[in-house]
Image (cartoon, rainbow, N blue to C red; front, top):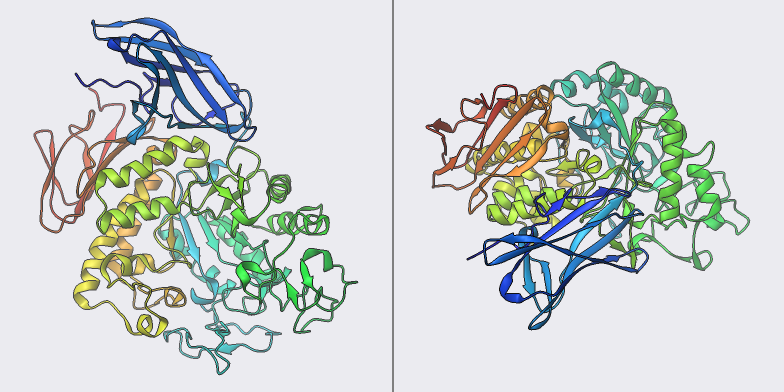
Length: 628
């Protein structure tokens, strides 16, 4: 007889499940076959940060029939840390281990394989204002051009006269890609479109770098204390923040602290500035910011890119400049921003992240701090060091690339059970206050457009020449719109906060940089797709289960993903069938008989949902009446 021996996701076996605060007692219960003749059972917990092992003896607590017996133990973690645990058994046939397998289940094995236990600071809180909301990401040069004239534009920039033409992608005569072409999108242009953004239900606008820099992406910062003149002025920034706030939205700005540009106030390799940069003199106030192997020409740069000198983020001068009393972090929050997105957060040392959080929360206790981490951020090892981003003293949450992989992977071939396992692992490993703020994107400035991935020919690492000429056919585009609707349903209902990459809602396509950074197609939008996103936005704003609601898997096999989100007031049942030919039937979860269909074209009859090919359904139930 098959019996569950342990399930880390079931409160019968582990209560509470998931990540826990330090000082919280956890009850473990295991079910063992009697034929093992177990004489002792031990919970073994390895603390990843201290390297110590803790052991807890389980006590026999009863039988189930004549074939199984229960053992249990209580354990209370005392410090915030990443831990791994398993059970060691002494049996009549020697030492055995009850270990983790797929889906959190336990099996008997000869070698230990551990479950993860994340323990976070009991005082750890994250901002309420973003939970249950919607984010909108803007690449500022390409979103909207106000038409106003800006003064003191730095030299060396090409301005496109045609808003709708393709970004430059060819190298110059020296074979260098300069990223020096601009379309003129600016901060006032964003302010002009705030009502449109709000119509999507957005509560937070994330803007790629806005500080002075001499490439169009602006990730090569030239001056952290100055808005790029092409984007406008500090007054324009303040106005944008204030106008967004009037509409119930906040602005999150991009912090690029791991490196600067070589053409910057701090390095000044090209002598653009009057300041004494580190490249100009060892007496420069910024000399200690950088690591020179042979001054001035040989220095440590970001990923070996010579135009991006790497910063010594733990240098006292750097820490003071960014996180001190009048530092970059606090000052731009005081001037209106609601938070920071941290570029390559996994390349910032702990001391910098600790100080950054302190500075941000001092300036604004409600400021949100989102880090760019592409993997599971609870167990990330960066540069040989186990990181502690989400234990309570650094980030509030992260960019959730694992969910992007889940959604796009499922819609392009992953099985439903494979996809949902990634989701459940994240939900199990992350503190709940982090999970509710996960930045769930389908695409960003660093990835191909989602509609291109879903319906276009895979690029297979083909070069820019091919990418520049590859576009969706009418048939592919129609398929892409259909698949974007399915993708966005998952994006908007999985745990976390959906983040729309500007233009995704309008049907913008494109392969890798710079083709994924095309201008927003004002006047040529796919209005039907925008209306779909507005419906999703209204749904998120209407229900409470997408803020802090529980997440329960229903049926996830082959081409189907379905799950339930339950809140205090409302619950949603979501089902997506990605198959291009097969209809799937799903038994309604408990409480959804009589629930109202709020999205999709599937049908419900006699307790069963019938989901046609490439379609979805979202059912909404009111918890006050659902069990009557």
